[in-house]
Image 1 (cartoon, rainbow, N blue to C red):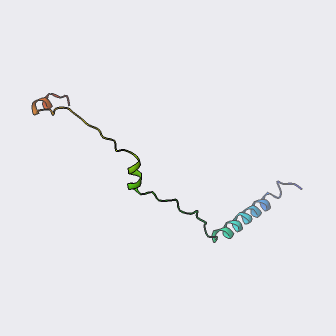
Image 2: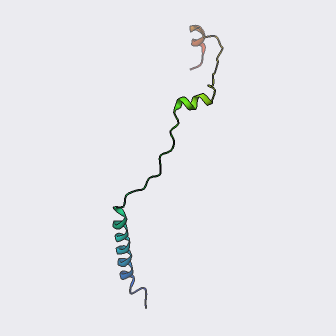
Image 3: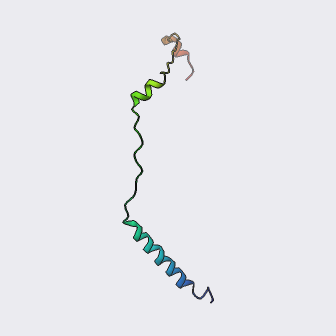
Length: 70
C-alpha cells in the first residue's frame, strides 16, 4: 500500500480520532486531591523567632544633606 496516496485518509482518520477523544473526555469531572492542611500564620510565627534589625546612626542635618551629591 502506498502511504503517499492515502495520506489524506490517514490525516482525516487521525483528526476524527483526536476530536472524538477530546469530546469524550470534555464532560468528565475533574478529580481534585484532598485539600492540604491549613497552617495559620499564628502557629507558624510561634515556631520561628522574629528577626530584628537595629540601626544606630545619627540623623543628617539640613546642611549635611545639602552637601550630598545628587
